[in-house]
Amino acid sequence: MSANLNRSSVDKFRPAAVLRDRIQIDLDARALARFCPTEVALLANPKVALAQLRKAVEPLLDKARHVERMAQLREEHQQRKDFVESCLNADPGMVPVHWGVAFREIAAALPGNAAVVDELASFYGQLPKVIGFREPDSYFTSVDSLGWGVPAALGVAMGRPDKATVALLGDGGAMFCIQALWSAARYRVPIVFVLFNNGGFGSMRGLFSYYGQAVGAPMDAADCAVYDIGELSFAALAESFGLIARRIGNAAAIRPTLEEMIDLRKPALIELMVSPEGAGLNEMTAAFFT
Image (cartoon, rainbow, N blue to C red; front, side, top):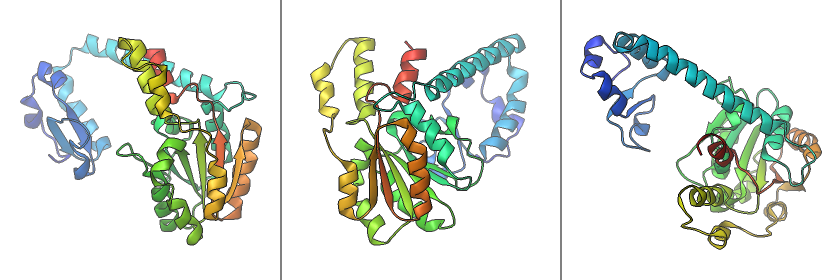
């Protein structure tokens, strides 16, 4: 269905059905129904489609209920915004570094024309709340598969050589395609990889731990430990591939190190030691949905 919606295309849905149906809007036809069951798929610009849908369904709404619901959503949005803000202002002296402090320092170091590749599985959706991406080709992310970030960053950097390219990666996800660092060095691609090292697959470890706490423990601490990677040195590994690399473990070093590496215009990696305690999505889930 295109973005050219009319009243008849919406009338077939009664209010109860609208609440029940799974509706997805996307500009990319390949993304429709790709990640979850979709009963109504709209191939359209979301901004245009949502405006037309709003006009079409407004006569069907209970206005008092609508006002109440919108107030509730605004309050919840503000609560989440305040939560992220509290993470950004966590103790800067914390060692290893808290993820929120790391985000804040990275945001401060990025030049205005930077292209950012984001594959931080523990923090999906959090980075754009910190960095206001406004320009086309400034932010790239995927929730489709792990291991996407390292090679994708090479493609972004090679496709937009006029921009500084910074890739934010988790240590677990990076392990799926770590050999792409060799390609970065071999072809001298000017990109800075910032690898968040929390000692393992933090998103999986955190989700299983939370799941156990929420519904009874199908996995105990020993089970969760299998998602620990161990004492790997990604800086040493990157150097062996031919990159300039540095490991840092305190917040004060993040901004100057990232600025220095960007200015080099060479393939480089910063291994950032972050706390294994707490991850963006898991912390937010625990704070708002338990």
